Length: 76
Image 1: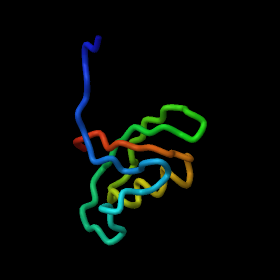
Image 2: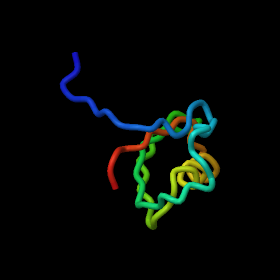
Image 3: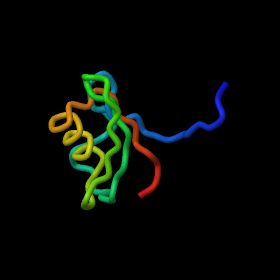
Image 4: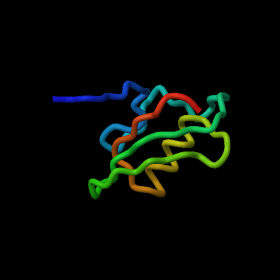
């Protein structure tokens, strides 16, 4: 059974592909946090150190951390 669960979103990266609804030109810039799974199967918890949009945050995770799946953890 399950005792606790978290509902959040959006799914930012799925199977190495950035969600097409995350736009590079998005102007909403905030401190972002997320959880991801790398290609090696490691869990990665991320918190930006400055305001960023969803797209740039997802790009950093995919390129620098090799994240293949990433879920935004709601809130700043």
